[in-house]
Image (cartoon, rainbow, N blue to C red; front, side, top):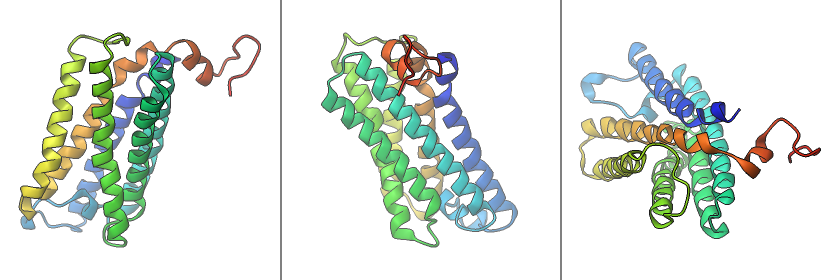
Length: 222
C-alpha cells in the first residue's frame, strides 16, 4: 500500500505538467492566444473556454492531491518526533498553497483578476516556502530519518533555489518573457513535488495506522 502512496507526489507532478501543457496547446489551437505577441501566461490560456474548464479541473484535482500529500507528510514528521509547532507551520503553508492552486483554477484571470492573483501568490510563493521549510528541517535535524539516496538533499536544495530565482526573475522580465518564466517556475514546483517520492517510501508505524484501510489491533483508524 505504501508503495502506491509514495507515488502520489510523482503523480501530482505528471498530472499538473501534462495538464498545463494541454491547456496551452488547446489555447494555441483555437487561437485564444497569439504566440506572435509573446509567450502567454498559462493563466491567460486558461481564461477562455473550452480550455478554461480543463484548467479548473486540472488545478482542483492538483490542489486535492497536494493537500493529501501535505497531511501525509504532517503525520510522517509527527511520527519522527518533529515538534508540533514547526510541523504545523509546514502543514499550513502546504495547505495554503493547495488552496491557492484551487483559487487560481476557479477564479480565472479574465473574470476575477484580484482573487486569481491572490491564489497565485499562495500557490507559488507560499508553496516555495513549504519546500524551504522542509529543507531547513532536515538540515537542522540531522537525527531525522533520511530516506532515499544521498543526492536527494542537494537536488532539493538546487530545485528550491532555481524556483526562487525564477519567481524573483518575474519582476525583472518584460511582457514577452514573463509567461515563459512563470511556466518554468510552475514546472520547477512540480519537480519538487516529484522529488518527495522517496520520502514517502518509508511511511511506517502510526502513520500507516491512520491511513491504512485495514484494521489495526481490532480497531479501525480514524
